[in-house]
Image 1 (cartoon, rainbow, N blue to C red):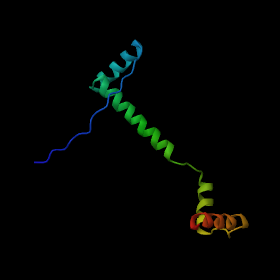
Image 2: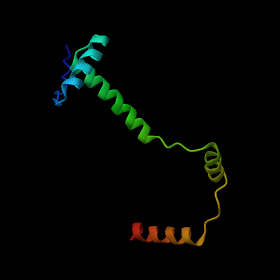
Image 3: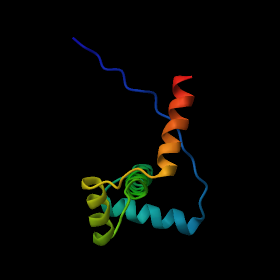
Image 4: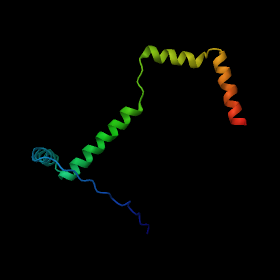
Amino acid sequence: MKYVMEEPRKRITARVSGKVRVTLEQAAELLGSTVNQFVVQTAYQEAQRVLERESIIRISQKDARKILSLLDNPPKPNKQLKGAVKEYQGSVCA
C-alpha cells in the first residue's frame, strides 16, 4: 500500500474590521463554506487570474500581422545587428 505525504500546510492570518468580517461570513455562508475556506479559495482564484493576466501580452491585429510578416520575411541584417553578433560571439567564444 502506497502512502502519499501531503506537503505541510502554512498558515496565513489577517486582521480585518468587523464590517469586513461580517461580509466574509455572509458570503461564505451563502456558498456553504467556512470563512477560512472562502477567503483561501477566493484569494487563490484572484491570484491565478492576476498571474494569467500579467503573463499574457495583448497586441492589436495590425501589430500581430506585422510581427508574423517579419517572422516570415525577416529584414536583411543591418550594420548594428552584425556588430552585435560579432560582439556576442567574441564574448561567448572567448
